[in-house]
Image: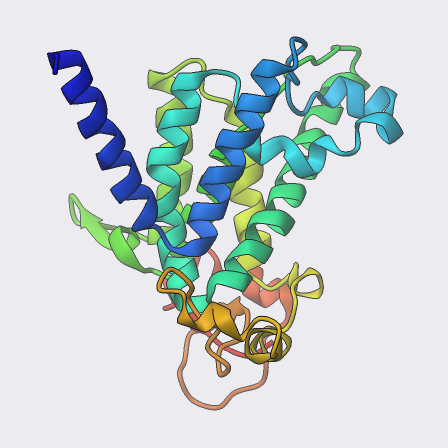
Length: 277
């Protein structure tokens, strides 16, 4: 066997092992991205993703891009990088909330991020600048996931002191947003910004009406038709006692904070936790 053949087989084995180790929601997202990318190339006239100018000028014929925008990538390099970094970012949400909630997050926050991206560029149209920034990829979802984790003060996003100044974890995605644009000019700044805003909306509970309640997810998982999912190692069941996240400062019994109060808590020094909406 030639060296090329040997390393090709080893590479395929590594990819297979990596893919099979993913939680189910991440695996489905990765498979969707790869499948749509192959179909997109095979079409001959590739789908360029979400174009604000087309959404604003012909919304009915282009509205489906709001659903497909997270899964379409402009280049193979962007696709590979996103597939490499998305699963670790999605892992915390999926392991804490379950596979079905994570899938719900990918769909809903993906659509919301696309809508926010269009809204962000509308002012350019208002002043006569025809924006033609077609976008696509998991970038928005990745920034949304980072924002959710950062505002929970979890993982690498815990509050740290730099030169004696405490920096809350919530500010880290914003720092990364600016640095990525400074060092990588091709970085989709406004799309990533929309992802951060989408993550904040999820974190404060503003999107709760678009998510299937945990009790319903538990019922679906334990139904006779889908009970087999629980035997699948990659499947993460929904914890029945956890609800959508908000941010509060104290652990004791207290009145539920208002939406404005939760929004303020995004940049406060309080410790984020899961609490009922």
